[in-house]
Image (cartoon, rainbow, N blue to C red; front, side, top):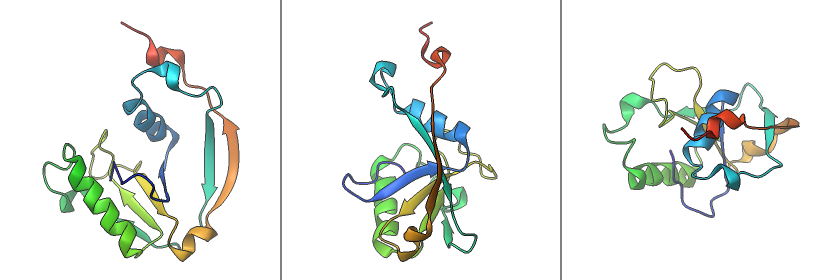
Length: 133
């Protein structure tokens, strides 16, 4: 669910590095604005953390273009504090059975404290991603 209201304590992540890169690129209008100190953060999460799925089948047909709707859905999930993790489809790669999905962490949920950073490593985008045609 993209476009959650500003000021909410969440982390937007993905299960795979490639989707993280795609999601970042989708929101970058000028590559010069990317920080030089970009890092890749990996997390360890206990297997018993409750993950709430947001399946494509349950979303309205126009969800990819209706940011107020996805904001409302995301905020409703955050306020309900029903699960620590919400697994959502990617707007960029909206494939129902995709293994690589976005994950949102609700830091208001008590289980969020059980998620730990396992590594932080420097990450550099390939310049070809930003080459002008």
